[in-house]
Image (cartoon, rainbow, N blue to C red; front, side, top):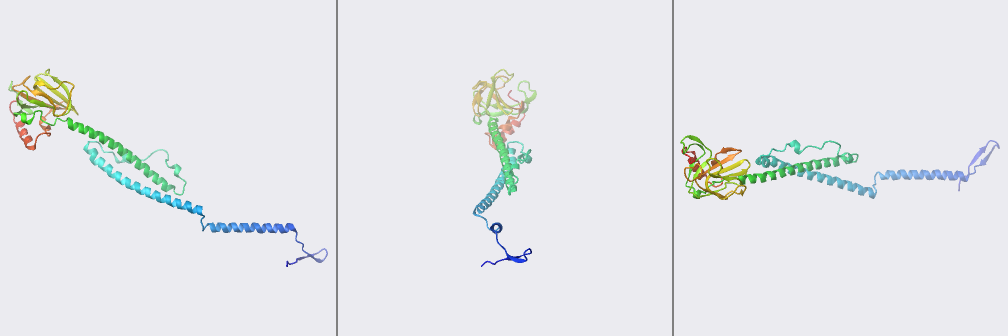
Length: 323
């Protein structure tokens, strides 16, 4: 049973019953409901700090998974960088050294990126530092791979040039060992067979019967095949490229013509005694950058160490040349 409340009325000097109005009841009810809602909200917020909703759990799990993948990616990039460092060292110390190319400076291989901030769009997030660091490492690795790729392209070109050069070098005797009577005169000061005066003999004389085959000592192009040079008679000149030219003089006849490409070992002519010659032989010269050099230093292609030693001994003997 609800309690009846009274109040003292000073005008009538008597106690009067307190009458409850509907508006007052509604106001009280409204205040009570608002208080209940606020209390409920506070309770929910309090529980939210300790209990994550399902969607929040999913997002958190995805974030942790992403962090793990970034860590694995960073580890793989470090491993790739170590492998690339090994390739770079071999490139500078072996490949480029072998092909006489300058090493690529370290600062050029690992140069950074200048200008605007490339990673500004990645700033402002919870894991920005991790993402920016991984992006920087990937960019540096990509640039190093690009530089190394260009270096290997250069090495391939140098290797191809080296292969061409090795094939072009005058590396064999122009007269077969089986057809050679003897090596009559070497490179150096010799007695002229006609004047008996000492003069510089710029080639080597190979004594062989007339008609003995003569072979190109390296790949090249025939630039002369005529008898218009003083003293050489019928002669051939081959431009091997890379600064090398060989000369074959006193031939009896040609087997090539001007402008023809030849390879090492191709038959180019035959021994004779044309021009200023004392007897049938081949006068052979090697020129490098327009200067005559000793041909004996180029016979590594078909002489054994013992044969080379014997030829060197014969070539060193000062006597009379055949031209």
